[in-house]
Image (cartoon, rainbow, N blue to C red):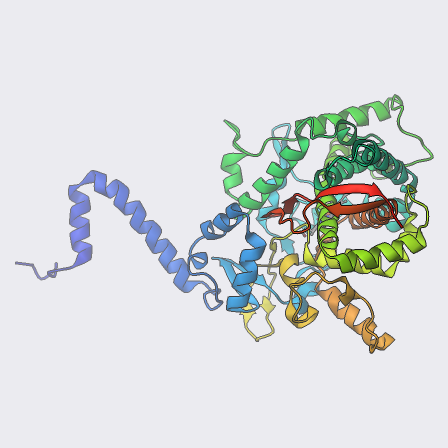
Length: 524
Ligand code: HEM
């Protein structure tokens, strides 16, 4: 019979009695119950509870970690937005927004919107201390301090000053393609070769030296593969940033991504040789980033030391090579699958560039409207970064178009892949690759076209936005705008299997493999 103070059937009493009686049960059960209660209370009291999303996502970030692990992040997000609308809850404290009208707010220049801690796991340990670079630094004031000495070196005039260096790499790329594939009539792993080109290109503009991927025709030192693993690690760990302290930053046995020690070694060797005047590849009349960074050390000695220069050099390579290769690979993949688009592009380029084998001057390339449309469509359709770029909502909160307020401290973000396919902006055919959408329609006035492009720019987050916008965008655009017409003016390029379905992996980078081609001398 139950006493008055312990009513019969009280589950709490039974539980307490069991726990007191059984020490093992208490060791296991008590933390589990505390954990469950914590999750339960957090879920039900969260101010983000009102926003729709997968059930598990509201409880734990493990859900989104699982999606990143599966490597179909962008596609999953697309389905979720179709199901739930423009605001989707991806984690207990994270909303993904398909609201291009807010892009200038979330990715602003006012210094109030901070990156979330997801970015911090792309830092490294130098001399026993976690060191952040321009991409991983989340404090906006510190970021501005790091960026100030070098930002002008990424401007259009600065990268234009490197055009001669770029032409040199393009010319070499053509020679390799000619000897290895065109003359013997061999099949080309074109997608791979675009990566070799992009890495060697970045080596040359960064420190006047190629890594040698084109010469060797392979990822001979494993750097490209290590780079992929490092970026995948960043994408996965970013979903639960504290994991990085256990996996990579633990001082006992780091389990993080394989480090880029060979690239770091190359960067240090180049800096040392340059400072000692022993760098034979560098020609002062052909400036490179290393030269610019050394000058920044002289102009900003309070910010730039040799460690910072190594950081700048590495960021150039890690942020710049794969992203540009992904873009060029996507461009060729989609263009080569469409005889109509290929014919239009070929006709424009070959009329403007009657001679093969000559690196296209940037000014000439930028004046080709169909090429411009193809590049823009590629960036929209296959952005190299295809994950939510998270930011912390500052006080007093973010007002959404439905009038609801996302409280300060919540995390929100937009995904270039999702906003790039927003049907309200790009039309019902937003899921199709069609460069013509970027051209002025026959029945469209100049003003209407201008307005449409202005609106479309709000949904262009391919290079991020605001004060954290991609630093290398002018350089990578120059690379793409120059290389594509040069190749099309020189070769007839065709997929060996026009129906080829390539391999894709959508995590932080939207990686791809494939684009197997034949290359023949230009026929028309
Ligand atoms: C098609 C090529 C490229 C794409 C699509 C791309 C995309 C992006 C995006 C989306 C961001 C912003 C990430 C965020 O806010 O969460 C970013 C940042 C950055 N990118 Fe790029 N990138 C490209 C090429 C390059 C190149 C060639 C370089 C350097 C040579 C570069 C250097 C950087 C740096 C330093 C940042 C950090 C900027 C900051 O936080 O201040 N990127 N990039």
